Amino acid sequence: MSQGDLNAEYTQCLQDLSLASKILAHHGIVDGFGHVSCRDPRAPMDHYLLSRNLAPALVEPGDIVTWRISDAEPADPNSPHGFLERCIHSEIYRHFEDVQAVVHFHSPDILPFGLMPIPFKAVYHMASFIGSEASPIFDIGDAFGPGTDMLIRNTTHGAALASAFAPTAPSAPTRPLVLMRGHGATLTASSLKLAIFRAVYTQNNARVLTSLSALTGGAQNVALGARFLTAEECEAATASNAGQVTRAWDVWCTELGN
Ligand SMILES: [Zn+2]
Image (cartoon, rainbow, N blue to C red):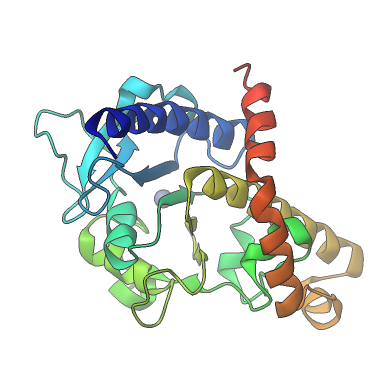
């Protein structure tokens, strides 16, 4: 790819990250907090792109900063301040070379599933990427004791979270979504638009499970009686959804007025 093409792709990434941030806010997946990143197409193994410290709904292309994957520090030392939790992104990119985008969010819809072992599995085809096994829960207290402020503040915390996406070190996570006790969740994808798709349908999956729990008299009944998608259904539906990501992205952008 020529330098001109790379620069054009980089410019598009800035635009798309701004839109992605606003879509997440529009859907209530993030509020004043939470963030989305992607690799920098100009140096994908070394750098990633993430907003300066700013509420997602307010992120414009000019707010995006280039960060080093090696230590989550800015590529340009004169850059504005970043999110405290940017090590979430750097460590996932460092661990999994096939991950292209990361979303971290604190949605109250997802929080209950990180507090108790209520199985968070795919309940419908649009959320099939979640899989047929309960999503892993990262408990910062298990890794770093009972006195943290729950935040992923450094690369050691980030590496511990990244390891929850896969027990070993494959190029891609074995589980694309990790719930975080008392904090929220983080998910990964092979593209920025797919990451947003997954965030929206993770939220919907959580809402369906909560509704089902209310209808059936409790989460225990859901765990015992719900007919979650099978592993084969998850795989087939995820393949079908792969061709529909842009359709969803386009309508979500339109809802923003773009
Ligand atoms: Zn957080």
